[in-house]
Image 1 (cartoon, rainbow, N blue to C red):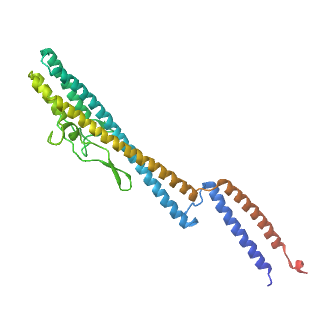
Image 2: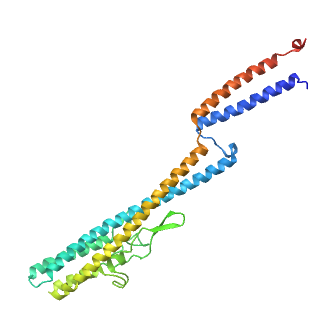
Image 3: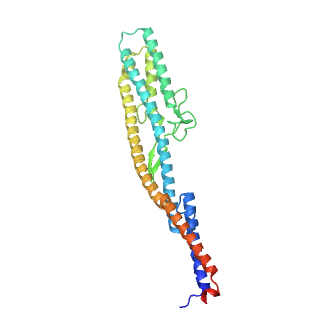
Length: 297
């Protein structure tokens, strides 16, 4: 088959275009650090990259949920810990006041201390985190306890998603925790009511009334402790979910890097080879363009 000068020139030109196109691709990869800069570069890989990025973004949202939930539960645990301290002191003082050896001054001092402890419990029930009242349920933009100790929040659980379809509650009802349900005492121990009874009993020198609240104080302590135990289980759930999430994000990020990121040293080497090939092709095209009729005589 006879190869004409025009055919040779076209082959050289086509080779130049192919080399130039590949060189431009490598230059783009070296400047962006990406194998695929736009969907047209590799539609299948581009779709896979978008899917992986979506999964990673979803994981980031779960991570934020876990962080917010952990902060909420940590604040709740601190408040409950202080409630436990208040109840421990209340039990100690109630035991002292349960015998008949205390005079009026001692009873008055104890009554004042119980009043202060009651106020402290109400204050703890109104604990805030970032402007939200953590024991108020859905109604967490206003204090869940008024000055009289009445619960005005809701018993609803605030759920956060830690994985697809997996949710964990981050709050506890202040009404259940400190008032024993609605109405008070209907489903648990009315802790604030215990302090009201102690204050009333001391004010009327009712020794039997003080003694009657001793087992109730034990039940109050158990109620707070039980809630803290459940809180610890939820914290463990968050820790476990965070560990799984971190492993998943690491794996996804690695796969994304394999799909998306270039091997910089390899690209530089390939680019150098393409530039050399391009120069050789240019030189060849120059020779072709110099061929004349005298070369065939």
